Length: 129
Image 1 (cartoon, one colour):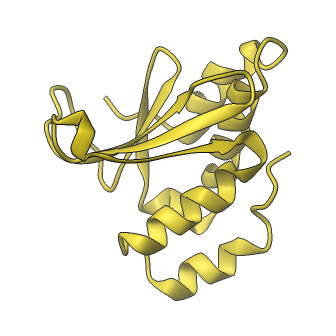
Image 2 (cartoon, one colour; image 1 turned 180 degrees about the horizontal axis):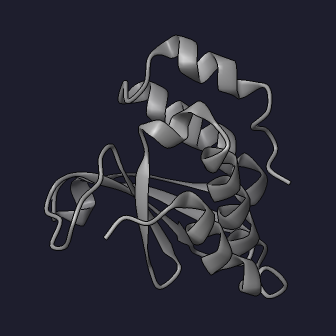
């Protein structure tokens, strides 16, 4: 079910002219692909949602994951799906330019990576191009 980051970027690329939020997801996938994070983040797409987990998974997947959804042309919603009760899920909406920094903040808050790894990534991640 998980796919290579470059393949995920290519999934979004044809739609970049229509919605900047999809272009931001393509840029994010390319950044992850060329970073240290690629070794510890795995993902799949569901239409235009980008779902991120800490290890390769196969369908069906019933553990917590981070879902990034384009909610408008220029905004993306981050939602941590750790319960099926949507009211109890952590979520944030950010502008496209903030997608990289919001992801790094999320990864830090949940301790998905050591702080040193995330700090080494910060310089090249904001804003996404």
